[in-house]
Length: 178
Image 1 (tube, helix red, strand yellow):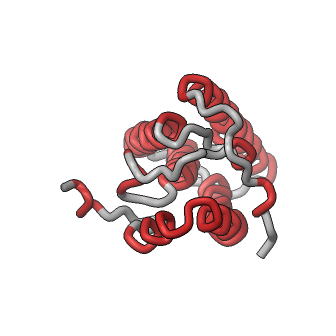
Image 2: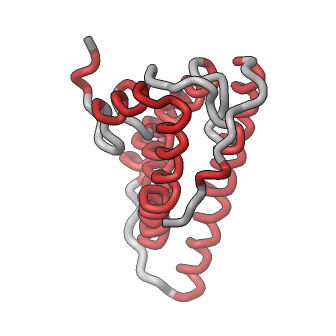
């Protein structure tokens, strides 16, 4: 495992509005790079190399893209407002976030981003974009997540341990709607 632990730094500002603004900017950059520029480059490579594609699945792809985008936006808002930080590891939340979508899933933002990438693959009819998105999931799960969890254990102790025990990483638990 690579050690990304040292990059996790709580946000200097606890201003909810400032962190919300920074989160919006980060989200815009993420979407531009990972959901537009890289997929367009991969699609171009598929065309140049005559890699097999499939018939785009537009309606389902767009519907799911909108749903996962809303999940990502809700996650970013919750992290900024309730956590007083941003999704960026170098500007992470000051408070443990267990509200909003984090009540059901420990990593709703990663789930949203990866799923958005898969949706772009469906919309563009691209196996390569879907593989790219799933590769991002593996990289995040095996390289980044362990360091993030070390940071959360050290900063929030028992509260995080209980949260981790009761909230799944990738598959939501909806029994917390009470």
